[in-house]
Image 1: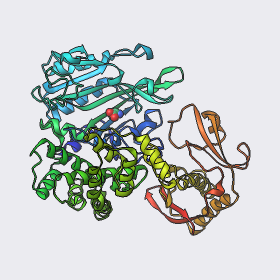
Image 2 (image 1 turned 135 degrees about the horizontal axis):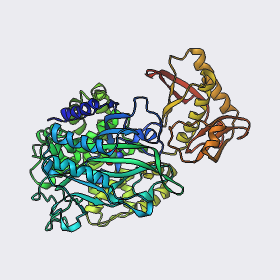
Image 3 (image 1 turned 45 degrees about the vertical axis):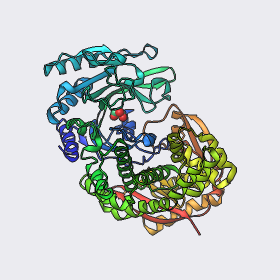
Image 4 (image 1 turned 180 degrees about the vertical axis):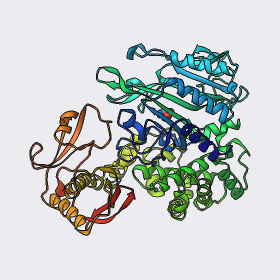
Length: 621
Ligand code: SER
């Protein structure tokens, strides 16, 4: 079974059970300013888990491209990757535990052909503080399912260092078996949905303790141990609660949110504990082996180097395909770190290899069927990545030499490496760690602040870890999206709704619902209105308001139902109560008055999909 076959088999299985196949969303979330990347399949589904009606119905399935930036420095083991595909099926207030657990078990054991004796599961142990009891319903269903294949499944408290013994179902608390985007119940903001979950693990066998340093190296390990013997391959979240001011309340509907690691299930299918040896990576590794003349399995260090390079280059290509190119801020900074870390690792192999031209065509070919936009843009992707690669190659060796001169590393030196040789701070920090030293990010920022205003604003974007960049231009363009939105609704009609936006240093992009090409007159009227409001230098007011009240007053809200009860509202106009031109629920930031935006021109207008148009605005002159 190949990666493509597994993906198709999963989607077909759930389509046969009444699900609609929805496309993977972009790696860059539209309309979600809280996060830089799509990191799970459920992220784009949140409004519907909270009760909004999904146009495709109550049963959905897909394979979502995901990127987890927090994992960059952890890559190198047998199973973690920054980019991955998450197989997902959802019930939006339709089926619940019985169907979900039975189907996922049937899919894995019958369609994929995994030996059920190799599967172990976990369930929520309950938490009296939040009034949610142990998930005995799931325990009962799992017992029946295992019994159906001749396995007596005992449910036991989590095994800790005692090993799995004769347990098959393990109870864990909310650190492990509660799922929300923000983690445990205590960390969830009011309004956030969450619930108990049931994870599935594949057992590669007790002889496979991958890390000798594991505390379980001499003890039998347990499913949640990190030694590599067990691999989590899927998670059924029973999303039935929402955090409120006074605790947890049932959601208006009981949902299922399943996420399965495509690459990991493939590894389990082939009983190969190393995802890098499945066909999700094999063509990339093979190319690297040929180009370097080094074997992936030569020693543990070459294995690590190959894994880092294969993971990072695949992720960089995927990000570029979704419009993220290496740069100094926001998403682009992560693309830069991937590229520069790959170049440094490849350099350690002692061979001169140009990664982008070598690997972009291979990756495009691997995803030709499922993600053809890579092949369509292959030349462009290769060029932008190669540009970055060459830039860093030029200074890498000098930077490493400089580094060797230092007996100790400090923030000043890390800053010098950053400014002169383009070493991302995290790269220097990683090298210091390899040398047994720890560098403090705050000190680095201070050193940077002390050096120049320009680098101060760059660092703000870099270290916010998940938030949008807040340079003056970005903020001004953000306010301009509100004006544009209001102008479009004024000129075309109130049925116009924002569908997404994207801001770079040079322009803003805005998607909105509208059925046909804008005429010259309409375009002229829209941009004239926007500029008139800019000329009027209208004040931008900010208020925290009761959600229902804000909506009643005509505030626009475009993230479905995801807002908490008290919302942040931006109002543009002479008076926030009576004389305003735009009122939107929004987290900001914004300029304080519209004159700061400067005159804008409408550069381009085109269709994005049926019923959705896109316009680009930039500063004039
Ligand atoms: N949201 C859950 C996860 O990310 C299951 O889809 O694991």
